[in-house]
Length: 138
Image (cartoon, rainbow, N blue to C red; front, side, top):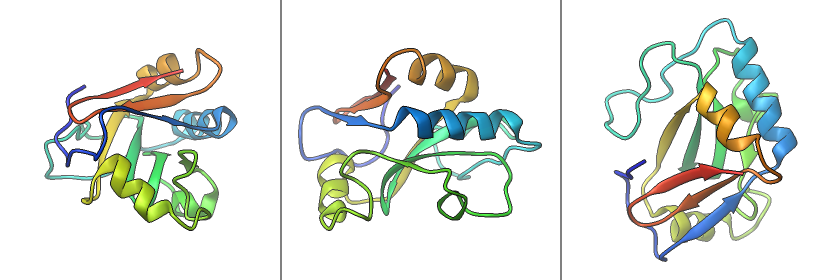
């Protein structure tokens, strides 16, 4: 999948995520009664209306969230999976986010079926980021 957001300050970086938390997020999306377009008006992976899926987001850290309609934010509900070292619990998470993701906030959408196939098949879910690509895997 091509990247249309600011280039990171390195050649390649693999971001690892907690598989249990990714499974919880995917289950929440599967069980959701509605799905929202997480961001609109951008050309970097906006899903069709109501397409269930997940997003990797770089803003206040780097994390994965689902797009199910919910009364609480992903952070308040606990349905957020931060990349290792990129959580606000790390005092250097802002620097890590900028080095890995770049300075601007952005995200990339992945439909639910692809998320299940790509992130739950192996031992450790990851997203590999390069200046021009973003690859999901496990």
